[in-house]
Length: 71
Image 1: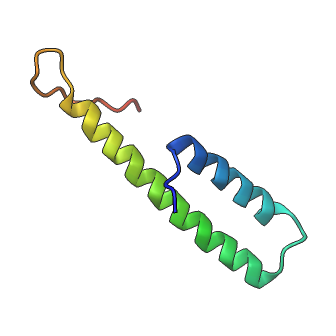
Image 2 (image 1 turned 120 degrees about the horizontal axis):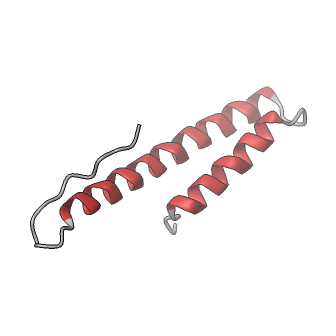
């Protein structure tokens, strides 16, 4: 199974949310969609953390720079 990009993961999450918000899904299907969404969210978070660590490791002088999060 091919791994999705962060953007593709967010698109997939949007699709799952749309399905959950519709009135056309059963309780069982809602639970499965929720579970799938949580798994996809975890994958996206892992990719973001990996990217964040890579940014921290890249510096102009070959050293480390801390990536500052905006609040």
